[in-house]
Length: 314
Image 1 (cartoon, rainbow, N blue to C red):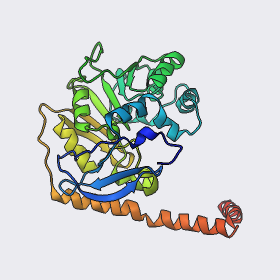
Image 2 (spheres, rainbow, N blue to C red; image 1 turned 90 degrees about the vertical axis):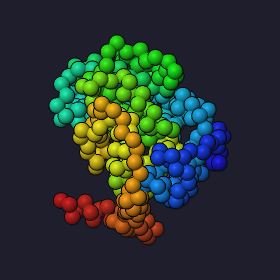
Image 3 (tube, helix red, strand yellow; image 1 turned 120 degrees about the horizontal axis):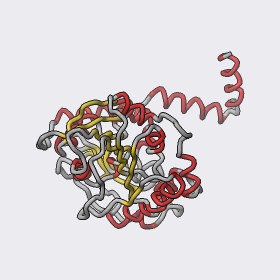
């Protein structure tokens, strides 16, 4: 393991697919930071997962000590990251705009996995009642202290979650892919909602690999790599139905179903996921531009190329 990564990141567990199948086709053996993980395409249902994610103890330490955010913001303190992420007052964030487009009127919003609460600030400024839960104590404490938000630590699975009433909106933004069992998390959030609650889920999808690029898409903190189809299957098996989706942004709006549907596996989804992975890996335009930039840099012509481009754009 590289010396700049904590040693406990080598503490792992073995994980089967969301459909229950073991094994699969290995598509990659390291993440964006060079950490050794096995990423597999399930040959039963087409879902992609990390088969050897962090152990429960390692994951708890990873999230509760803010180590994972240090990877995103190397050398920055918790306070620095918080101020970097908090939007300007009265900003209409993309998440707020998405909720408004769904026709949900101003009410109460709860974010699960809120970190320091920066996603909640635009909602609060727009008149919403906001609250949030997270595992990361330093960020939760700073969000309460510096932003004045109602933020709390996520209780143990056995403990009751102390909320006065079901929120109008629950936000689960780039959190589900971190969960060992995404179905269990969705079921837990279902217990906090009513038939009128809208659950907003934001996730990186196989369909959006070109947005992130293959080299950066796979990450130590991410366990599950959903496609549009595999996410729908997991959501329905947890008692939710998708009422709206914006695949290019990885955004979904969910509402309660009267009952949970059994998860189904379809071989055709394996082929669909394989095509998405091949497209995400090949990405010919991006790789051609990357090769061009490297060639220009090697020849000492990159600055000249930038100058010519600026002149041509005038």
